[in-house]
Length: 74
Image (cartoon, rainbow, N blue to C red; front, side, top):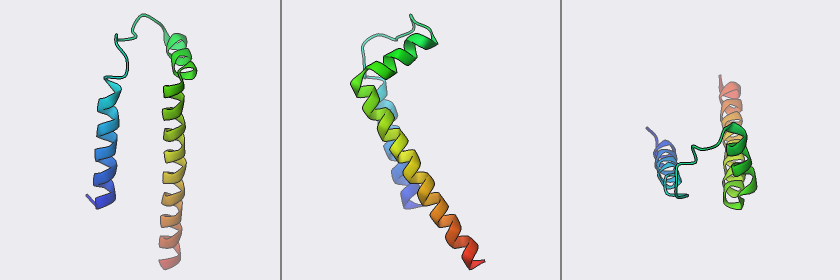
């Protein structure tokens, strides 16, 4: 695995493990709509939704740039 992949894996693992400690309780009492409203009304969740979206956009742009370079070489 390359260095960027190792860093990305370490970051994802750290973020996933912190999710477990986000709130007390298991949030299993509601349905899908309750869970969706919880994510969309909590400011801390909105921040991480934004970070995830920005990271996805950035990753896609980097992926397209790398593939565009490979097409011109081959």
